Image (cartoon, rainbow, N blue to C red; front, side, top):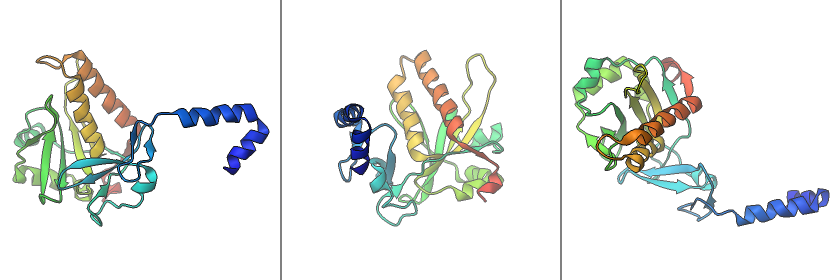
Length: 221
């Protein structure tokens, strides 16, 4: 309010216009705890048992941790690009995931690692062979630091039209993984998905790569 009075004294008309625009903004959603308006990117909590994401404002988000202190866990904001991640074609095939796009996380409610892949019907769970997964973890110690429920190993081995194969691996916030699933579900058309859905997936990973911290595995060990 003090800043508002100062702005009014400096330029009353401009300040009034700004104040009016802010009051007229329609929020993209509401915080599920305090009903405050949410504008643009916002934070999430997850309820592990239901695997349900909950939209919250920043003030409510800071009340929760990500280690199971409460029923809800706060989803982190940052992703880590694993540029030196080790996964051979044979190891990938041993996971029996039917497409080249998936994310794997530890669900504390089920007390196991779960592999999901996007589909036009939403996220589909793929049976995860425990011995094959254990071998991949042994080769990539960074996975020991993956926070249950809120972080996932996000794998992109899709072939890009007209380009070379570029395998990408991230420790990504779980809400980003579900957002990717939503993009595929929303934009998929016909049997092959159509050009639009692959453009959206490509754009998703380009933006994620820009925002992600690029680090060696030992930085998380």
